[in-house]
Length: 305
Image (cartoon, rainbow, N blue to C red; front, side, top):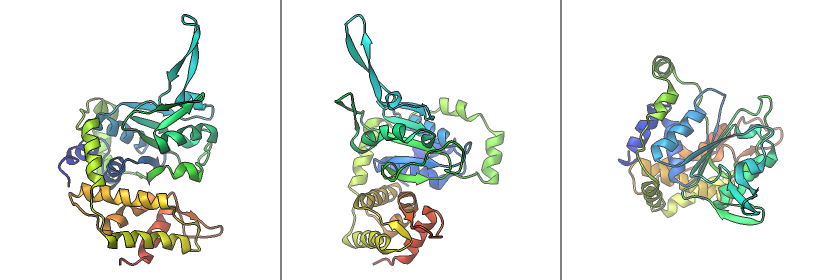
């Protein structure tokens, strides 16, 4: 385990119990400069994880509760007339922060959801014809409820593709749940968290992740995976080149977490379901299950060069 990251995982793991793999994927996503989508039932700790992560990393944090009446201006900001100056002044929205939590993102309409597209892709927003840069670093952590729940609007593929990873927390095991029930209230614990990193240190770690070596044979393996998803008849469409870059960046981050200087095929296999699960759309009438199950079948079908 990387020595700089170990205290981060330990601090978050004291809040979100029994989810070591999901926490490592979350930190890997941030190290790879990606945005994170957490999909699960209400009450399993999605929002708690986002709060704890922002505090431990020492980053500015804003939370937006997505609802059916949310407007893009509620996220991006708007210009308001100032009677004293006789002109309009721009009031930045909550997106102008380092970590924004889009809570229950699929409860908002597609129009409100799309307000984050430019921000997630280009780290800037265009409001009233003016383009404004967002802080550095900038991360979106979105939570969403399962699509079968009442009052949800499915995220379009273009929106899903902006998220480097999608994870699910699931119910805790018996030991973790017992510790949760008998322990301190989570909000109080988050309030007491002290930053372990800061924006400057995080940027240095992200730069170190980008320097992780990827051998030509490993690139052959990634290309074979991408080609398989494009040929397979069980998918409506295969993974894009951008998805391939996302997979490679996530694998680099996973190798960095393990304290290695090069990516192994096992790193690609470990992060593949989180990176590809929300990008692989089953073909009509296909019964392969959800995206994560389909991702596991892809890994089983592609041989390591």
